Structure formats: C-alpha cells, structure tokens
Length: 458
Image 1 (tube, rainbow, N blue to C red):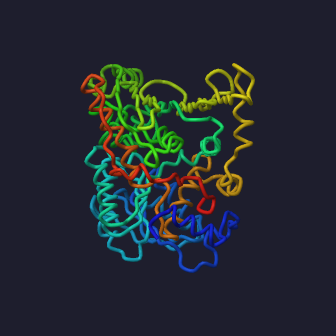
Image 2: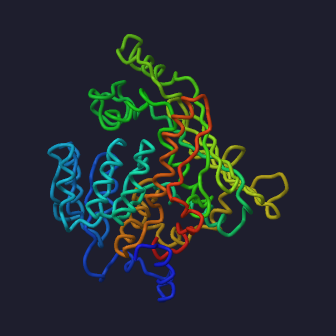
Image 3: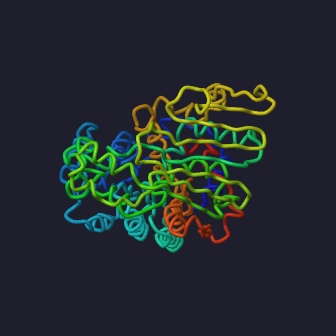
C-alpha cells in the first residue's frame, strides 16, 4: 500500500487508532526486524546510527564511509548496544553502490556532503530501497526533478530527514494550526540563523573551531561545506526553517510555493573571522567569498500567503530559526534561546489573549502539546536535537514496516530544496522573481495533509 492517507484510513477502520503501546510501536513480537544501512557515519550520521541501534525492531546490516576514523567510531556504538557488527563499505566514493546490491537492505539513510545527496538517493531508490536523505536533499533544480522522477518511475519512497518538523513546540503549533486557532494563514517568517564560522573553519583535527582551515586542511564539515560559501550566493540551507512552515501552509497538499525573490548583502563575515583568528597574512584571508552574509528571500504561495526566509551563518549571533506564523486570528512568534518578551517566545490569539498584548507561548504550547510528544517524550530524551531525532527515525522505520509513503516525501524534498538554486538565480538577476516548478505535476491540488495527523505512526 503506497498511499499513506489511505493506509491511515484503513488502520483507523481496523481499530488500530492511536492507542498503540510503545512496545508494539517498537516492533516487539512482530517478527523480522527492519534491515537498515547507512551511507555516511560522520558527525550527523552517527546520531542516526545510534538511534537505529537503540530500537529493537531494526537491524543495521551495513555502513558505508570513506573515513576509517568514522567507521572505527561507529563500530564502538554497535559494541555499546551489544549488536552484531555490520558489513563495511568505503573503499572509494562509489563503494556505496556495492552496498546497495545487498538484497536484505530495506531502508537506507544518507548523511553525506550535500553534493552526494541526490546521486546517492537516486541510486538507492533505483535499487528498491526506502531512502532517507539528510537536508538539503538537492542542490540544483535538475536534482530536485531527479528525486521526483526516480520516485515516480521506481515506486521507491524518499523521506527528507528534516528533524525540526518534529520539534516539540513546532508540532504543538501545528496542532493549533489544524484546530483553527490562528484562523486562515496569511504570513510566516523563518530561516537558518546560526553562527557557523566555527563549523566552516577548524584546525584540521577537531570538527569545530581551533583554526581557520578548510578543504583539504580542514576536518569534518570544514572539508566540504565551506566551499559552498566560497562559490555560491543564495540560501544554502533552507529546510530547517521552511519545513515546519510548509507543513503549516499545506505545501504540496492543497497549496504550493509559487514564486521567490531573493537578495544578499555583501560578504564580510568570513574574511573578518579569518583575519581575527588567523591573521591578515593567512592565505585564506585574501579569498573572495561569494555567499552574502545575510540572504533574504520572499516566497509567495498559490493560496495567497507570503513567507520570508533568512539565511544568516557568517556573522556572530545566537542561534535562531526565527519562526513566525500569522493568520487572521493571531500569531506565534519565536526566537530560539530567548526568554519570553519582545522577540522571544510569544503567542497572541484574538478573543483569548488580551488586546494588543502577548501571551507567554509556553502556556499555549503545553495545552496543545502533540499526542506524539505526550506519549514518547521520555523515550525521545537523549536521541539528539532535543528528542527530534527519535521521531524522525521512528517515522522512517514505521513507514518501511507498513510500506507507506513517508509524511515528508520526494515532492517535499524537491520543493523545499529548490529554494537554494532559485534564490541563487534570483540574486544573480538582481532579485528577479523566479517561479517554482510544480514538482507534483498538479497533484498538490488534491493531496491531503498527513504529517502529524495520526499518532499511530509517530
């Protein structure tokens, strides 16, 4: 059964409902375990590995990474969980294809540098594997189409592993949206506002900071991620912000992204960081960085809403995804890391809040806490990113077990990731409006929202 919504209807009719116990949800007594393989077990992939090993309804049968250090580190997690060591691949950059020939593999999780996301996802789907890919899923419009086309040609499913969609407050707000507390959607803001200078540069020995090296002299993400800042000017990392907003606005499910217009500031932050930490005579101090320090995009939707998306990774600042969701009856406004107050975590609902005054968001978020978090909150502790990583693994595994489409699928991966190439083109053309392709080929008009609608698969 490939249609998730139809499956949920069938499950409800069959009386499965939402009363499933955690032990059942983890597959105890249900026979064979889901066979999983991972491509990339570095700083991000190791979290997915740990969460897969934690479950008793999964078996990690293979891992692939070209780094011997990453492989050795990952094997320690198998020992920690008392699990059988997997088959190892990584003789070269394409050895993952040999891994995909293993017939027993049902699901593949990809946590590699961005340029490999689409090629590996395409190969995985062609091999008949249920594929989970880290964000962003694609770097070009052609790659976005590749993900959609291969999914449709093969029938293999793709899940974009956007964990922020499972954040506890994000899911509580989703519940409020679905129950109509904000009224009709009008406007939203979001973004990726995160000082990544210590990620883009290090000393070649540790993953974060300690120097101003990158590329061959860098380590971990500094080996590859920094090159994108050197050669590209656009919103390089949109999905943490746009994923939740897309769910709130039913993108690809009754609505879709229509147009985007983007602008970038001058690029000064990375050069300033290099000079301050490596000296003005350091070879990297004279590089011409292309990525503007702040990239701002305005998106319009088919249903008449607007979304402002901000990319801000080169300057000193606290972390924030800068969420704001506003409708005809109120809004939620959240800046991560701040106490409630102007610019903090705030809520205003007409007829419930005092006129022209903010409410503490916490009271609303507690009241509308999503049933999934109420049920699995304690289990999710320690799973990574405040528990979000537990839910994304949980959803991935249970979608495989029930042979249904994931709640964030190939069409979402394409639409959310398309922001990167479209913003690049818009900036190159002086902010010119760019049109989003309709990756669903018209199916968005009839597709229905599924994410978070039924706790059975969370």
